[in-house]
Image 1: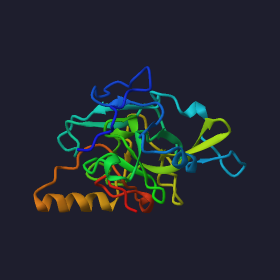
Image 2 (image 1 turned 45 degrees about the vertical axis):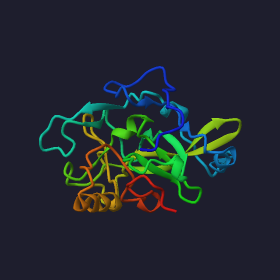
Image 3 (image 1 turned 135 degrees about the vertical axis):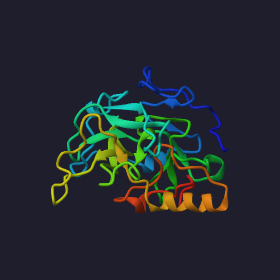
Length: 243
């Protein structure tokens, strides 16, 4: 398994309840040494009236609106593992949390091909976010399949965060799905309900191929690449960026 040249360390003084000891908790992204100043600048823009950055009041770490909970349900695909649950009612289209991890390039020496937590941040630049060894609550979000027949209740979206010095930086956020034209999702996510996304067809297709070849493990870990609504901007399920 490819590892970062330096072990990620927590950049937050607090960690959420049920946080794993072998994973560094992040309040802000961790950057690989391979992410150059030029690459980072490509993710930054100057503030403008056409961009609405996330309010800093939404970026509390640990987040007070979600909690990591062990799953003890034999019928749940992730039984014996963890999921992310709402600590309060989350209205439609509301922001839940950022997806944080190690921001890395697509270079072979900078990418973990076995990762189940690697999300594509920018396809053209070849930049991804891997939450295998460091991340935040978002790494515990499960796929809806086998849990919620009605489909996912959350999705990934591009967001902008004010990083100071007159710059906004692009990141990936998790949002409650909108109410929809029919209004069937008007209730949002209820308190105590599990936050669920779609990992995307590519994730499950890859897992089926691995199982058929006898080399795969069950895909029961939290979150990976993919979402039914923005699947085209996400990397493949093995963690290698699709260029």
